[in-house]
Length: 165
Image 1: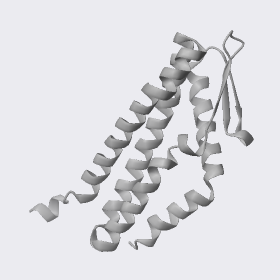
Image 2: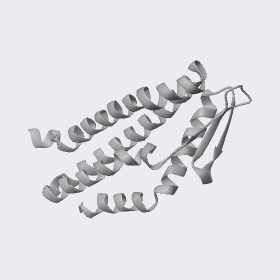
Image 3: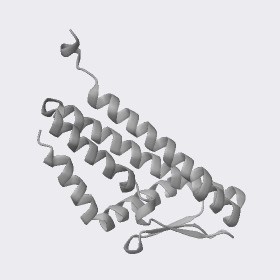
Image 4: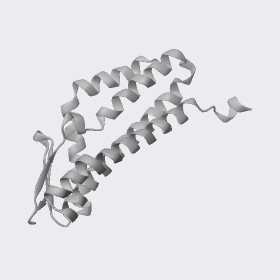
């Protein structure tokens, strides 16, 4: 498994960041539709999801480059490429661990968006957005990113049963 694979994905992620954010905000909109009683609208071309439509507190969230899960996936890809370059025989494990860690980071980011929306509904736009974006959202991202990193390291460096025997 060549180290160029994760690097190529990283470059693709940077070059296609707008499409990635569009996909991520579209996913957030679909998840919000599942859990929300109020209207939800995704303006994919603006990477924005509007929620609370029909309520007294509608709000739009824009997925900016610093709010996307790509911000946490990129370092994993670079570290994964370095690990494969240094130890080519673990390439398959590293790629598998990258997939699991990336999916974890994406899920955590979606949970962060849902948490923000829940807090806006509960506390109102001003306090809910403040607590959901600034404090709790940051904590969710940090702890989720740390969990994904630990999972990545564990999955990519653990030995297979045949190697342990």
